[in-house]
Length: 310
Image (cartoon, rainbow, N blue to C red; front, side, top):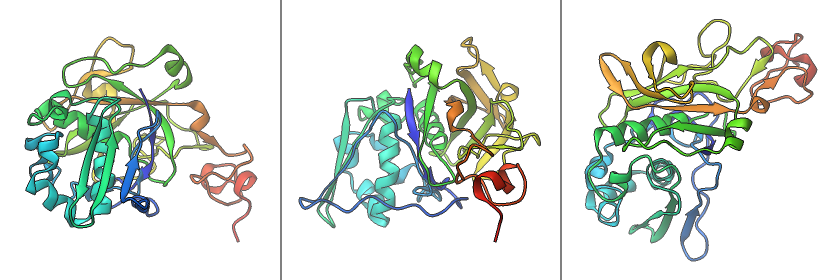
């Protein structure tokens, strides 16, 4: 399933301090007070829009949301209204991606902020949490998968990049993807897992070939270079090394894993794939957001693309 990764500040409001430029909140309401956040085939979190202090934004149990469910009754509860009112712009951003991850495509969730009379509509896409989407309390598997999905959509540079999300929903059903999608998104990237609802954090591992010194990507939080470590630390997202070292294969040739474990806890993960075209190379004639000026051919001193530094 393709989604678009926006740089949110893995701070995911839940996650902590972001490592990229600041992102913007939802666009201003239209004249009738409605903010429509459509789920296109490419969507995602902006690393700077949702700080990893934002994903936990007062606890990703969202002061009871995980128990009330993503139904009308859940979103109309006093607990949800109290949480949302702490920072409506950030809360709306968080909910956009929570719904995208948890709710199936073709369904929406709507909430009206009584304080501003603004209506928000969030569209589902991946459907990872069918029970929670239907109004039941979120199971542990649903909490884990939504957490992993939110982490997977982070991006530290404030740019959008399409990603292919692989794995299973909380009922064990494979996330659908077409042969055309897999043929386009040929580069295995990362595995993500954790549980933000329970305060257990979120983790990422690397599945991709290391970047060489000329290459860079805005998906930098779990993409390693020759050092074996990510180029950017995206706390509270914790890097745990190779996916294969911490995850159990599921027989899909690396498309996804059954489980990933750390600290004695086993999680339901998701994995991501990207297009080779989204890996920038020094010398391709464009100064990418991941590249810097300099006098070399490396991504962080790319004279050919970004020129000499002043």
